[in-house]
Amino acid sequence: MQTTFSVTAGDFTKAGTASSQIKRMLKQLGVPQHTIKRIIVALFEAEVNVIAHSFGGEVQCEVTPEKVFVRVVDTGPGIPNLSLAMKEGWSTASEQVREMGYGAGMGLPNIKKSADILEIDTAANNHTDIRMTFYLNGDNQ
Amino acid sequence: MMKLSEVIDVIDGKVLCCTDLLDKEVKFGFSSDLMSDVLTLRDDDILLITGLANVQSVRTAELSDINAIVLVRNKVATQAMIDMATDADIMIITTKHSMFKASGLLFGKGLSPIY
Ligand SMILES: Nc1ncnc2c1ncn2[C@@H]1O[C@H](COP(=O)(O)OP(=O)(O)O)[C@@H](O)[C@H]1O
Ligand SMILES: [Mg+2]
Image (cartoon, rainbow over all chains, first blue to last red; front, side):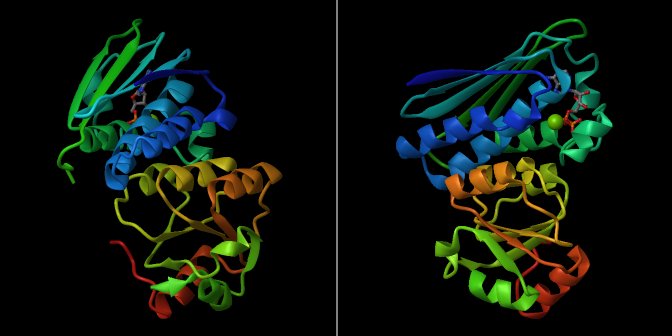
């Protein structure tokens, strides 16, 4: 089972639509509620990052009996210093993003905490490609 | 655990949508305008108390399995918020009290803090 949603840069009124649809799909597939919750909070933070920090991108989700694989990939501008960006509290978010209730530098750390496996490919002037794996047997919480 | 009907009583609240959830119970209260902070919570049965009157608070509640939002200081919920909340089965309650007072009243009646 695989699905893809595109995410438009800057459009906060639609923030969470992709996450919301994927949540519905995971529910229908019978994924346990606590696993859905950690998948969806990680996905939502990544979706908000695409809207807040990138030129736009897409969300892909693939479900197999063993795991849920989520990929969030955008078209740039990339993250120049990833280890800094992973730090709790580090943020380049605009005032507008903060008024929306995001932009506290908590997204990437929460993604890391939520996913069983997290892989990020990014560089300055490149795309950001975030791949998260969540195992369906045994919750990491 | 506290029924939403009791929450409404305690903070002298007004319900904007999903009145069918009046018997639903919440265990924890969490007061924040910071949605990224709400997204770190892993507990169930949370009541979100916030001054953030935009669709982001409703979306965050939906995605983190929160069934009720208290909007403090008589913040006005937009129609888009009410539509999204109705769709996601989330009760929106408004109160004239500040976030501090609403939280204090609910804490005093036994709603648990998360931290
Ligand atoms: N998709 C992305 N494209 C470009 N930069 C990003 C992206 N995601 C995150 N970043 C950078 O990493 C920082 C930290 O991200 P995050 O932890 O989600 O915090 P926040 O979004 O609140 O700033 C952001 O402020 C931004 O500088
Ligand atoms: Mg973020």
